[in-house]
Image (cartoon, rainbow, N blue to C red):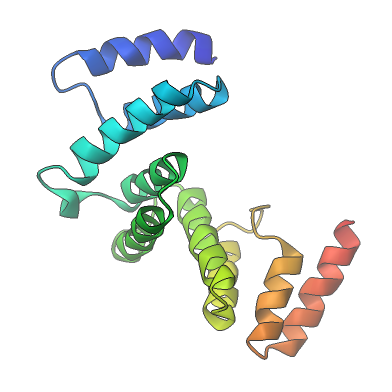
Length: 169
């Protein structure tokens, strides 16, 4: 699949006005999959510099901000990634995603950041919102969700999630 897509995407971004966020994002993913770190960084940096820092970042959609968060992850820029993911959540609140999986993945990523910062109540709510949008998301790990619920004093939820985690093992 990538073998056919890569040259097409490269030719499209070489054309005037062809370097869209989506194309640069997919080229970044392809380079990552191929372990081509210089190309991965080149495409991710180009997207960040031209799209996020471009003329109208306020017009970006939740899907766009999600992709920018991932691009910052590829560039190992955790603060910028977190800011982009949080902007994605805000954008999705205004205009829900066409594909709820993007919105759910964004909520999971932000919930993980909140969990790591020991904001367990916010994390537990984020995980629950993600599952409400996309119940089959396996990125919401029951054990982690149970710990977040426990940390926020939601003991019944915590027990239910811990039981679910044990049943998956």
